[in-house]
Image (cartoon, rainbow, N blue to C red):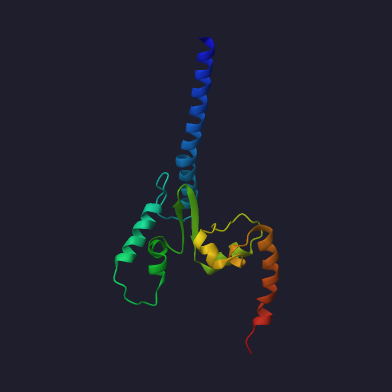
Amino acid sequence: MNNVLVLVTILVLVVLYHLLKTLHSIFYVPYKIQQHFRNQGISGPTYRPIFGNSSEIKRLYAETKSESNLFDHDILKRVVPFYHRWSCMYGKTFLYWFGSTPRLAISDPNLIKEVLVTKCGENGKVPYNPQSKLLFGQGLVGLQGEQWIFHRRIFNLAFNTEILKVR
């Protein structure tokens, strides 16, 4: 009887530990990340537990699909409607969520340059989905880590401003 009580207590503690760890990662960490960016002046759609902003992104794609297919040179609102809508609402830089994973959308050219030039490697690329991997293959778009650093050194030489000057 005493052994069973010890086993049940251990089992309850393990389950409680995992439950608290899950709640921490689903609720507390995203809340702190969102507060951190808000303190820096970066806002975005609010985090929704577990799903993030995925349902809103799906809804915006469905709305765009249902609209009439009039030709317009501004294709951003048809290709990535969530980005178009949120950049109009929150500015050039905003935070949105895929599940409990934050994504920072940046469209300010100076900030993009700073992010791409920074060599700390803390900014990762969004992983490929299978269709885009078929489209891009193993090209520059999909490189990460040491491969990206090697290729960046090579194509930085090709895009040197002295070489590209138009006569």
